Length: 213
Image (cartoon, rainbow, N blue to C red):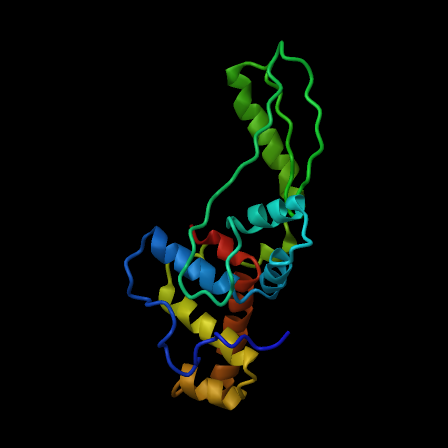
């Protein structure tokens, strides 16, 4: 895939989110959007979404996959508003069975709950569902720690991660990256730090962005 023309110059922090911005929903969405719009899969899905031949069901799947309605051009600098959706389909007692065709997006699951159970049993049903879903969680995101870089509110780190992604995308040399993003560090330290930061940057771009809420 070609290098996007909208990428800012990674050599300077201008053009990136301000790490000193107040922590609120707008800031969360901005960071989330910056990583998402660099996601190659999202960029491909955007191209598909703008294709008139895409079916309504396919569009719906993409809308719920990315929590955006409609999908937004990756070249757009302003962060969109993300929504958090849940599918509910009920068959109340006395109303008969319900039948229908379901389009399930990749990485999603449908879970059945028994409405004839008592309220007290709801916790048990939820816990059972949780245990059933755990083995199916994507292995891709397990390396993003719950208490480490990329999870706590660390906007200065996220700024560096974005610049690393953009530097790599534009084919920057490692020597230049080290001099600008790790000034004064030894070559060995640069190598170790870059390797760790690149991994976490990739994780946020490839799915970890969902943690920004």
